[in-house]
Image (cartoon, rainbow, N blue to C red):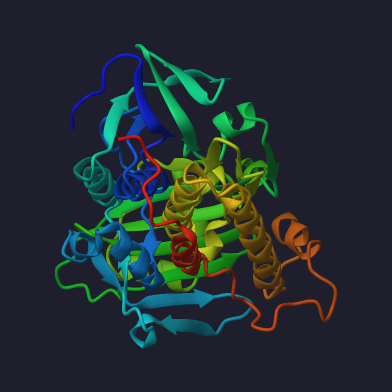
Length: 401
């Protein structure tokens, strides 16, 4: 990938090279825009493992990476299992999905696949931290560690803090302060017929998630509110492991795989938030910078890809003269986030076994009787939105390049 020169110019600058930023870069490059992606690191560090649901298939196909993902080092995910609200195991089998199975991802490889695809589409990468951003006339001027970038449009993909969107006048609304205490636990995959499914199990302090990952490791995380971590000693490997021993199915799976206790834990943000507006003249936010979801929804990467594509289409339409495209995208993000919040309240409302701070907080958010969506636990299927926005995107090419 060729490095742009100091004070480089482009049609669009994208801050952040995660899945959302890379999806926006690929889509805009395909539209004919010149794109510079600014990211603090040129390497993709390890990230907590994540399951990618099968409905992401159409998004991956539009981005041109479906075959690469299907043939990559990822392992199939055949469904989701949960113990939630009782002792009965609930199962969702992806084999009956019209999209087929999902994936347990090697996140570093997945993210790098998207970045490489963006590069091949024509996007350029600038490695460095963004020191400041300001609007100068009809353009954005970004100051980096070394030099700067000037562009007509800015795509904010820096994560849930949405620092650049806030500088542009947006507000981040936070719904909670959840965190996930994660571990990647090696095991000998030979001879262990572990289910290739994700598993969620509720607990008095919150809930557990676990999934088998590629290359013989198991990803496990405990999810709770930040202020409850110390009281449960969940930030300490010994305390985390003791709490895990009180589970039912998670403990059984790890025992079957002969998984050893973790030597260390990684704490990551798992809070729900939304930026408003998610777009305005000259800029748009994507991924967690637009809408960050509680991981119980398992929609993080799908939403990242979907917002990246939809925002890119909106920027392209705005450049072609559609004055409503960016505001329509912002309304789409807001509506999808609100739908997710309704679904989340119902999901947490199903667990009534514990009167603990974590659960009392969720139950206080319950909707009034009769106001629940007809389909209960379901939340917004964000994957359908980019296809809708793609139909609205003009066919002409408004870019100067």
